[in-house]
Length: 325
Image (cartoon, helix red, strand yellow):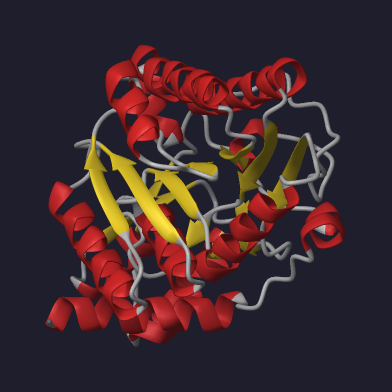
């Protein structure tokens, strides 16, 4: 089978993707610097779970610590491993933090992507899957969001870096022949989710009977997508990259839920009532995300398998098991 590089494999989505690839008989190389955006202990735990998966399926998982901006680290990785394709997930995430530190976000997300693509070019690797974001759509008035909509007006530095990454990928596809698929994620959740993200954060606050931040009037909507559906789409995107020189594809559930309804479902699963700390909408936040996934269905055979009711139940079960272990 093949060997794939995952940048950001210590993270939430990256660790699940590594599990899936290993279970399919592939070898995986991880490049991650365990950035301090959230606890490195959580990332170490994610990597330990992946190592268990590698052992279970008798596959190789190489855990390399380093920064995607470090040219020598990236060069050494590629020269010491025969990589078939790259899943580039490593990035500084989050809309609100990007407003506080736009320069660092640009450096990591854009410079890091350029360093990686330049080495991929030098090594003659032809398959590259880039993790973009639904944030590039901003406050788009046309819904659901399709890939051909105008995305030239990002409303946060994070969104701007993700759109810039897509454009960098187009350059390397057009001039260097690297087959690149850019995947726009729509609010991914599930076990191992980052503790700062809404579902994880809200569950912990409800369990601890603490007020949770409730931005706006509760009508903002998100297209939450379960992590296993996202990973299945990523693997299909890598397969698609063998024949397609460049494409942009949404991965979502294509079924939105309001903030108020989300909290109601969490209350039902946790069997506790939430205390709301009502706050104004935050700068950079969008009022709605909603994926048109017809292109993903056509090109990747993508069909989400886990709806929100089931996904939230699975997440709460995982969180309770983590809390008691």
